[in-house]
Image 1 (cartoon, one colour):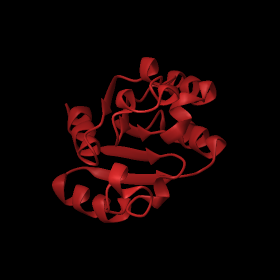
Image 2 (tube, rainbow, N blue to C red):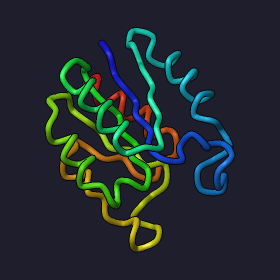
Image 3 (cartoon, rainbow, N blue to C red):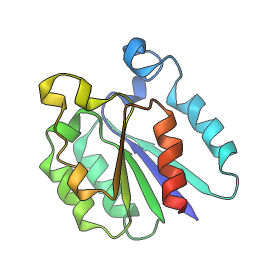
Image 4 (spheres, rainbow, N blue to C red):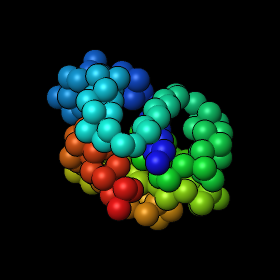
Length: 138
């Protein structure tokens, strides 16, 4: 079984960027542990700071993976195109945000993607990715 994790803009800076919100662990380090947590699953990881690259990756994986875990970063609050991409594919997508977007600035409290995803996990830190993978394994 293959599951893809997609991280959007600025998530390449995890461990460095605002550690009081996002923590001190890099995603690469976290991902190594996540792979050990799910030894029977093939986990792939993709990160881009570019909306079009994220859409292309969703289109590429959206008909061949068992599930996608998507942290769109700030694009959750602005990108109808990314929401349309999720709506256009067959693979179930779980939206993940490390911080609780509903407890942050008003402009972060709305996600255009939430309605297009099978589920959403907000505010549980990096643990949200593990929970999303576990859910997709069903």
